[in-house]
Image 1 (cartoon, helix red, strand yellow):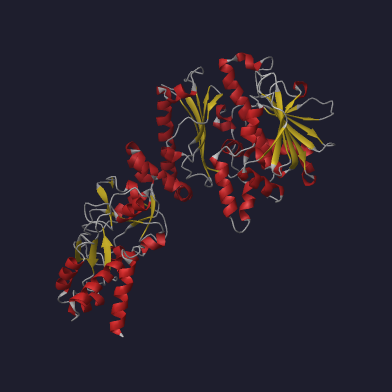
Image 2 (cartoon, rainbow, N blue to C red):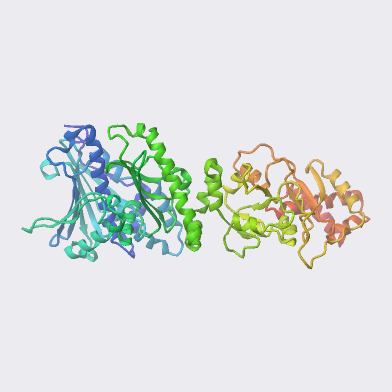
Length: 626
């Protein structure tokens, strides 16, 4: 008797996150409860695939039942539905770890999103995005699981009503499958239709008809033999001409664990030095855990139709939203998963599949820009990570990248579009970074560019601060921040009908005074080419870090001491003219200089460097004016 079988019946509490999720399922009504069956069948198929892999090293695990299968048993009189598989099975310890906790960050991220929803609309998302085994409680008041791990003599049971606790106990081996898992759902009164054969056949064919394991259905107490609903033939091995769009959608939903449709399907067979089949999908909607720091790709690796792992890094991290699989004819089955990851064959597959995915995106962007724009809306921020991480493919990625700009009227623009509209004497691609598009578009540093009709890229994603700092260029034009260094706009004329503002007299005298007064706080005070409406702004010196990147790193505690900014002054602004010609005392002019610097900081979304000093200076000037 193993350690697991020796464990007496034990009742445990679910993890807090699981309890919360189960409570919502038990007490809510969802738009599409059918999703539970797809989730249970998908789990069963994975168990069969895992056994097939384990049996490569230990064929005895298959015993006298080598053919994997999933059997759905209906008992209309008892009001139960059972999903059984002859896969790898579970021990009691496996049950506690797998069925009592949220093991995948995606489910936790789903829970966070669901909890944050204020209108209750998010609850309907459970019908669109499966949440694995727990989805059974959408239709069941109680769930019983009996399982025996392949190669073990002992069996265990798991049982719960979904109200906060579950029980794990040893079970008589005679009442358990020879190997594998049997999940029995005691259906709720309003879910009895799931014990109807016709209804179950319809759902299985619609949602799980292409899982790589045969599926059978039978009715308890019936003399009829179990009927096969799915043949278990791998969809990716069939000719494309024999596969319908509905077939692809069904398979995508089973492999991706989502209930939307694929925005792009890529199915091909590579031949030559290495042979492998690829069936991948780009989702129509954004996964909840897309930006989870622990999230890796979801591309499964098969070798001659034997499931190996879903943790092989087939695609780079910036393509982690792609779902699907690769089936290799060249990788050896008897290698460990760790050895496969280091295989030169896998390296060639990784390169080939990554290039093909990007190539298909390029074709889509050229042929169907609206469809590509929808993909970019969802995954553009992730694709841009490749501009920072993947130097070899940067040119391709730059061609795919789309931007909102100061002249695009909220439409997406490519760099090809941008370069074709360069102004005479314009030698750089200008951009502005930040956290919000509207706020970036209102930055005072953009005024001089707008006055000359110069298009500026508006970059609101965190990754934009990094890839733009890596010396990127496009068609020989470097990227240049509007908040860094001199603007060099004097060679580009103002738009037709605009006249340059005249500088006030004695403005250079005031600038020299401000430069001395603020010497400990700024690296320079100078007349600005950037400003047409605002009085002042701050920018980073030429050789310093861009303002937004410096601010972001500083807030994360990862930046060195911040460099002194440059204070730029609009020499044609009324306020600057009055300050230049004012008869104020030196103390008052010093107060005014600091107030101008604080005004520029506030316009950047920052607080004054010395809030108390700011208040005192403002009070002194207000008192004098009154």
